[in-house]
Image (cartoon, rainbow, N blue to C red; front, side):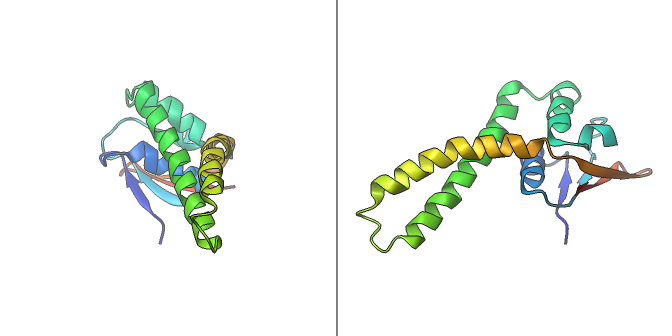
Length: 134
């Protein structure tokens, strides 16, 4: 089942960007009537631009969403390293260094993934969009 993201939800931008970076298909509903169009949802970069101009989100909240994606990716990486390491206490430096490295590379990977094109279809009347990676 595809995730459904509504603009009336808290952190809708962060959840949308996470779907874009994961390259997963999802439903997007503009129930807060922000005025988003299929063109605004064609890529994550377009969504960020539209959220700044149409939704009046601040640069601070947009950056918080991007940083959140990077931090969640680093958390996953640290967990994977901790599970793979038979002696976690002797490899603490590796875990911290790996988490730090992932925080930077995760942010780069997210920004790179944001440039991926997505096809967007709209349903007439209910402000609902279907977003699918190409």
